[in-house]
Amino acid sequence: MSQIDKPGLLGKSFDIPKMLIWEAYQKVKANKGSAGVDEQSLTDFAQNEQRNLYKIWNRLSSGSYFPPPVKAVEIPKPGGRGVRVLGVPTVAEFIPASDPGTPSQTEITSPSVSINSTGNALPVPITITAGDTLVNNINNLEKYEGMRVHVDSLTVGAPTGGNVDEVNATSASFGDFYGVITGVTRPFREPGIELPYPTPTPFSGGAAPASAPTFDANPERLRINSLGLSGSVDLQVATGAVVTGITGPLDYGFRTYTIDTDPPAVTPTPIIAGGMSAVPVPTPNVRELTVASFNMQRFFDTTDDPLTSDVVLTSTAFNNRLNKASLAIRNIERSPDVIGIEEMENLTTLQAVASKVNSDSGGVVTYSAFLVEGNDVGGIDVAFLVKTQVNGQPRVTVNGATQYNKPGIHKVEITFNYEPSRRLRFYQFDPVHHDVAIFSIH
Image 1: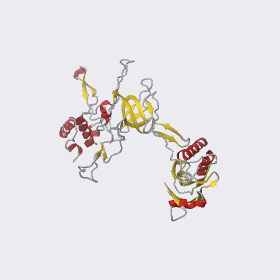
Image 2: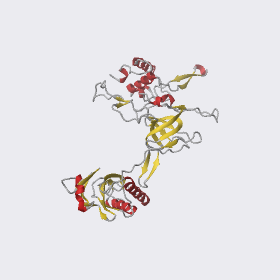
Image 3: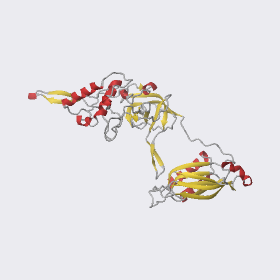
Image 4: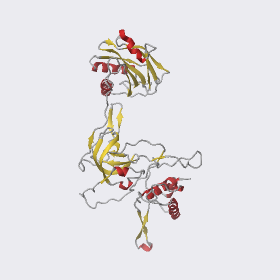
C-alpha cells in the first residue's frame, strides 16, 4: 500500500481523507494546466507523485499548509477589447532536484519588484518557544518561513562550522551552528526511516512493510546562520554554549529551519555564554604508567613526497602545528609515558614534534619518536612517541617497535623504569611478563 493510500495517521489536527486529495489531483490533471510560479509542470510533479501528494495531505491535515501565490497570466480578449487575467496556481512548492527528500520551500520565481515606500520599521519578531519545536512534525515552523522570528535562549548542540586550509593551517568560519531552545533535550538520531522519505519497497517490486519505524528528523533542532545577512556578526560558539537574543528572518537550509541573524545595526548581537573546552586529564603520580592516543589529523611537513598524495605546508603553518601539538601533549594529555600517534607523515616529522615538546618542557621530559613507514596512499602513518627520560633519569625503555601488515597497526614493546630496584611494583599491570606491549591502531 502506498503512502497516499494508507489510512489517516493519528494526532492530525484535521481529518482529511487521502482519497479527497487524490480526487482533487485527478481534476487538476484533467484540466491539463501549465506550470505556476514555481515552474513545476504536472509532468515534473508526476515523477515523484506519491511523495508529493503525501506532503500535501500531511500539511493540510496538520494545519501547516499555506498555498503559494497564484501566477497571473494575461489572455487577450477577442477583437482587441483588452485582456482577461487568468490565475495559474502551483502544483506544489519548490523541492531542489539535488535533494528530492527535503521538505518543500516557498520560492518566488521571476518576481517583479517595485518600491512603494522606504524607512519603514521592521515587523515585531515572533518568539519561537520550546512548545513550537516539541512537535512530531518536520514542518512545525513552516508557518513562520520568511518571517522575522526571535529565540530568547538557545543551547548549542553542534559548534560553529567551517573549513580548513591545510597548506596554511588556517580555518574559515561558515558562521552556522545548531541547537535547541534552552531546556529542550539535545536530540539524537533515532531508529527508523527519516521523514519525509518514503518506506522503501523490496527489490525489484512489492509493497513496503506496513510497520516500518520512522524517524521525525528532529524538528526541535534549529540552525543559526550568523553570516546569512550582510553586516551580521560571525558567531563562534562551542557545544554546550548558551546563546541569548537571537533575532532574524526564518530561512530553511540543510534540512533544518534556520534563523539568519540580524546585523547589529538592526538588532543587538546575540550574547554567548559558556561552552565546552578541552579538559586536561588528571595529573599522574610518578608510579603510574600513562598511555594516550593522539590522532594528529594529517600532520604533513613542508616537503613534497612524490610517492603520496600529501599536502605541502608552509613553514609558518608547520611551526604553528608543532606548537599546537606541543600544547596538547603537555597541557591536555599531561605528557604521558607512551602516545599512540595516528596520521603522521613520516619519522622526520614525528621527530620534529618530539623535539618541540622536549624544548617546550624546559628539558624536563625527553620524548623519542618511533615510526615505520606504512603504505597509505595519503602518506599518513601510525607511530609512537615514548617518554624515555624525565629530568635526565630513565623512564621508559623501548625493546622493539613493529609495523604489522603495513597498514594500520603498530606495536611498541617497553619496560617501565620507575625505581628499577623496585621494578616489581610495575608488574601489577602484567603479572606474568616483565614487559608491556602497546598497539596503535588507526
